[in-house]
Image: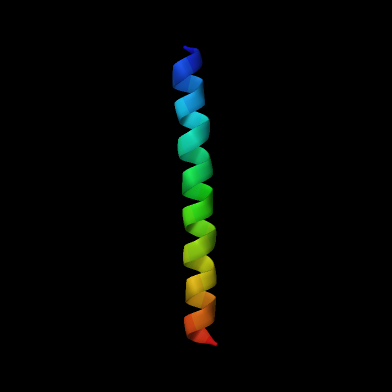
Length: 31
């Protein structure tokens, strides 16, 4: 169970970082 929670947190962090970097890339291209 602990391993599952740890993996979920890791996936959430990776997803957040990916979304932020993609958003900043789009903003850079638009400007």
